Image 1 (cartoon, helix red, strand yellow):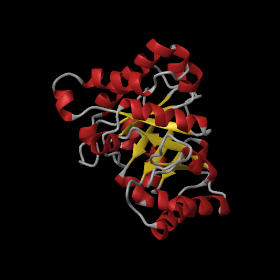
Image 2 (tube, rainbow, N blue to C red):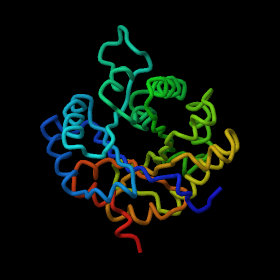
Image 3 (cartoon, rainbow, N blue to C red):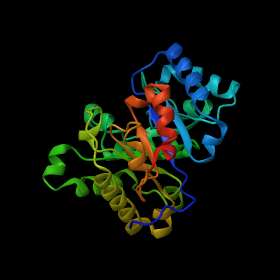
Length: 265
């Protein structure tokens, strides 16, 4: 279902800091990023940063005090509002910190911590109920890709993770395609590979929730996104943003990715 991007799909560039940066380093990174970006840069792209839980309040304070137009995001949450879940963070707690986006179903959560599509679905619905936007991650392993099962894996993740979610809600969400074999490895799917799967995701969403929903849904690519490959990736018609890992930890690198349009041929 590939086509020219409609103006309604403003690109979203998200920085997933994972388990990096203490709150002092987080403050410095945000201040450097705010300095590296100009007000007009935000006219072309939405930006979110997703620090560890211990940094959220510090980053929120800097963003609000300096009126930086960057959205605060979280990397994960529990599906319950409160309760006896030692070590967990609820969506309600995140919403109180003015978190706008929450990553759900990241491959590291699925692969390392055993999160199933059912768990991801519960978290996604909890994020929505708290008034925040989920960034749903889907993607295949290298073995699955080599076996020709990549599309089937992603189809199953979409169906399971979005079960029971209405079309208008899906339309306002974000899906991040992140091939597992390209996360933190230095390997990157070619722009053609990334476009092909992102187009497939849009087509699958159209089959289930309708063409209008698929046309509004923002689809990010994630997997070793760097300043050098961001312009080409972002030129693809079905890629509406990037979920950036390691490169988002360095303010200047992340700023160059945010400003990918300046480097496109």
